[in-house]
Length: 125
Image (cartoon, rainbow, N blue to C red; front, side, top):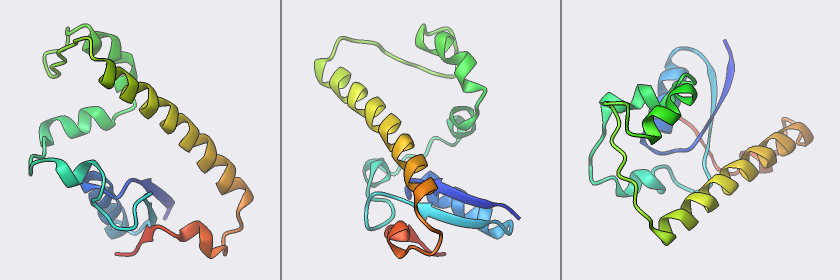
């Protein structure tokens, strides 16, 4: 089976990693926090929106982003408003995601498999 890295040990990341492991894949779950569920999943008010999980995880979402952003997709509701704090957060989130992707790619290509530091925040099932 495949070797898979799941980034993010929240509700979706842990669930995905668990199901992949049950299917026989070699799964590594990576998170910045020292414990699972310490990010966005820690404050989700016990609400899981199952109906939207698949649609947001699909690569096909990219071609639908303009329709979603303009409010033309009935499955998504976005209420745009000018909010300086939200804009700053969005820009930081985007740049952090980009930098993390670059860092992950560079670290993965430069770190030997047996290096224990690479697995500092991985979680076993």
